[in-house]
Image 1 (tube, rainbow, N blue to C red):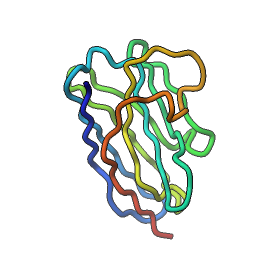
Image 2: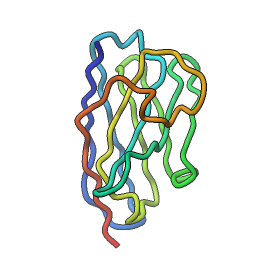
Image 3: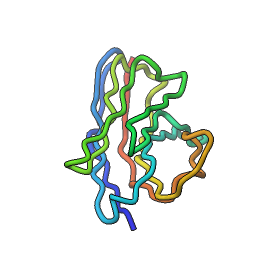
Length: 126
């Protein structure tokens, strides 16, 4: 079992920055992929960024590429999402996710992930 707790959400103006954190506990050595997803009201959950835990290989959605950076600190068992140049359309509930199951294919498919945090809200005003 893996437990995930997000923090760092808040309200910013367009063009501003936020850094989200996700602290993992439990069977963290079994984590294969970690990712950030977001979900705005009335919309489907969207994959934002992922990181392959053993190799640090990252993957981003086109909507955030060049503005967001996913990283991990293995010593602290913490996942980060640095979000720069935020836009109103980035506003959503952001979720940290992890999977202990090996897979091949798109790492931003929420169905791949078996552990989820409770979410942290990001609001961006224009």
